[in-house]
Length: 244
View 1 (cartoon, rainbow, N blue to C red):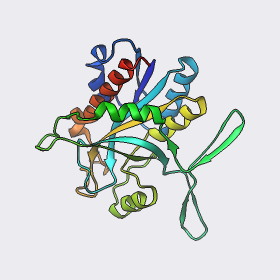
View 2 (tube, rainbow, N blue to C red):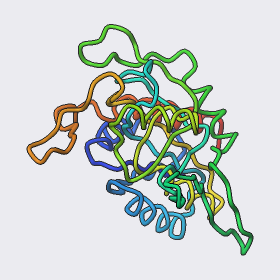
View 3 (spheres, one colour):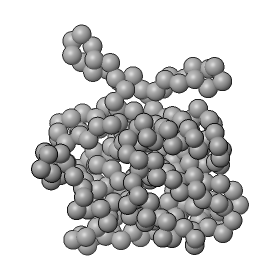
View 4 (cartoon, rainbow, N blue to C red):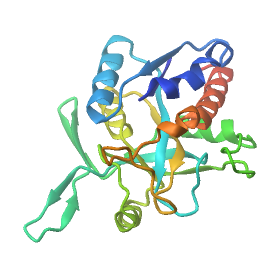
């Protein structure tokens, strides 16, 4: 069984519509965790204990960390970085702490959690030569790129801060669930992959704010996670055809 986790129902709808035709023999459990690291960790821990999936794929929308990544582009995460795990030194400098967890009483400290190599290979093969629908108002088909995904309960809009994160971690995008899902999956020994499509690029244009002064992607809701869902469908087909 493959478990697919996304944060919002609006993201899940894109895959749910196609789920019945996405595979031939591999059961799929589509889970909406809620937004943020705590919600994602709780959902993943329950999943791993109760169902013990063969793999976990997390998909949804993300903000770009590079100028050249535009709305609709898809990132296959080759690793996940927990960018809100840090120490603020007496000097005011922020030092990344990365991940700290125990598996069978063995302590693990790591700057990033790498994607399962076999699962990433399946994903690469699945998207090879694929064509995704352009973002509204765009004429060029979105790209699929591979690289690190930054994760935190933080929405970074400050351009210099985004560039600092990219320079430090090589991150292509940021989102709010993958670090938690990756860590819980690692603790339980379940292969994990994050697939994110770019919804906003604050380096190009600041996301519009609500009356409360908070950024909102509500007007883009029909597009959020749509292309990532298509990629996940292709991955599930590839996984199923390989008899996994």
